[in-house]
Structure formats: C-alpha cells, structure tokens
Length: 357
Image (tube, rainbow, N blue to C red):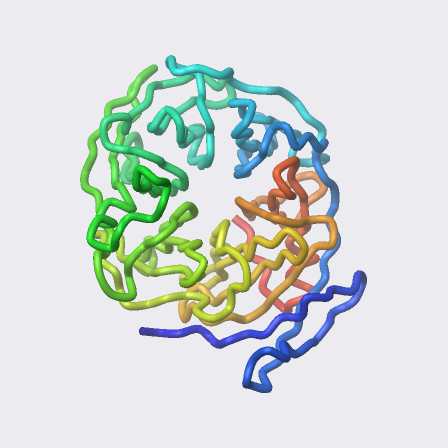
C-alpha cells in the first residue's frame, strides 16, 4: 500500500497569515504549514436548501454559471460565477422527467448537467442553457446514489461512475462481503433530445484494504487510469484508488491525514499529466482543504478559509473569466451557500502552479 505523508494540523487558525503548528497527540515531530486564504465572494445563504455540491459551466455565449444542488428543496441553484449573484432556481420536486428528489451531486461536461438523485435512485441528464431533461437512468440498479464523475468517450458518448451508499435495514454499513456494489459504471449516448444508456457493471472490494465502507465523492483521472473514491467511514477516513476497470490498485491517498470526513475531490490538471488533487476534510469547527500531487498522491499543502466550514462538494475552474483571471476554487459552506476563492490566492500561498485551460 502506498501511504501519503502523515500531516499534523492545528485546531486553531489565525486569519491573514500562515500558521505552523504541531499536533501534540501524535508521536512524531512532523509539522505542516496551513495557509489561510480569503474568498472573493459568498453566494446568498439559505440553509433550508441544504446545499451539497457545486459545478461550473462556461457557455459558448459568455455564460459563467455556478450551479449547486439543493438537497432539501429539490432544486438546482444557479448563480453568476463572476460575482455570486443568484440567477435562477432550476427544476422542481417530483419523480417525473425534469423533476428532482434529493439531488445530491452534479457534474458538468460539455453542455450537459448530470445530476444524481438519491431518493429517486437515478441519474438525470439536462441540457444547458435550457436546463431541459434528456432523460434518466439507473433507477433499476441504484439504491442510495451519491457522488458522480463523468468522462467523454466520443463526440456523443460518455462514461459515468456513481457511488451507491446502500445500507442495511437498520441503516448500518453492510458487512464487507456485501459491499461489492459500492460503485456503478454506466455509459450513455446523447441523441437530439433524448439519451440511451447501459449499465456496465458494479464493483467494490469485499475484503482487504480496498473495501469501501461509506462512500460519496469520487473522481476519475484517465491519464493515470485512476478512480479516486472517498471513504468517510469513521475509522478509515481516506481516499482509495481504483483503476477505471473497477480494481483496487492498493494505493490509498491521505492515509492518517484526515481528521474529520474526506469529502469533495477535484482535479487541477497541468501539462504533461502533472497537477494537483484538492480534497475536503469536512469539519464543522475546523475545515481544511488538502492538496496532493497528482502523480505521486503525496500530500503537499493545506489551506483553510475562515468563512468556509463543513464543506461537502468542491469544484475548480481553470478558465479565465471576469473576477477570476487565473481560475477559481468553489467549496460549499455549511449547507447553505458557496464560497468563491481565486486560484491565484491559493497558488501564491502554497507555491502551486497556475495552469489555464
């Protein structure tokens, strides 16, 4: 098993400076620097929405949309990504086409918004900017779906992975032997105003270090044939690395690093297959974002934002757009809204590269 470097984080963060602290509960003398970054804006806050996952769409006609799933109100919140102003509320509650029930995760690829609905046990695909449903799939295979990652196969075809956090009747994690369906793979093809789909397989280790206990976020990286799956189990607290065929690779990212819950995962891609993984360590009082090297999976930095706590999903834009000439990082803040942070702010504090699309 390839283990990332153990990091030790202080529970106290001071605004406007970088801090170095040692965790007295550990037996090593390792120290790490936690950078404090400021946000550009925060979207309007309403905790009744129970906001979970953000996504960014840069349209062909100058649109810059920041979308976020609202699990409690069954809608998608649309903001102007340049300034955080709310533009629209999309969809409505229900079980029919175009309706949503507990939308948990969202991914955007090309002009498609792909949404996981936990309570409808399905994945629904919408076209942008109209936000018209092209159809849904997975209702016969998925029990309790959460996270999603999407890859393009050809001009009209896509490959999709979705986590399934099914439980026992008493709402507990099933035995390891029953966890072989923690991730599902689908393919789908977009037609003019509809789509066709196929369930390829379900997978997940049923013994050993690759068992996925409590799953939500996941993300694929074709360059390294990797599928990173966050395991929020209270004991494991790490990110397990599978290949795109569904096999556990033996690699684990963030072992011993996460204090709270591994949550959102986002890839920052640079030339030559270099770049960074950004992850959330979701805490209600102390909330951290960890940066890992894309290739080696080693931990290389940590940052926090004083205005952003209890983060679920995150998304990165590597496009240059008004207010964010070097791209931006967008994390959820405590179930109610989205924070916006300039990538240059993060890169300057942690000596990271700036790589634009």
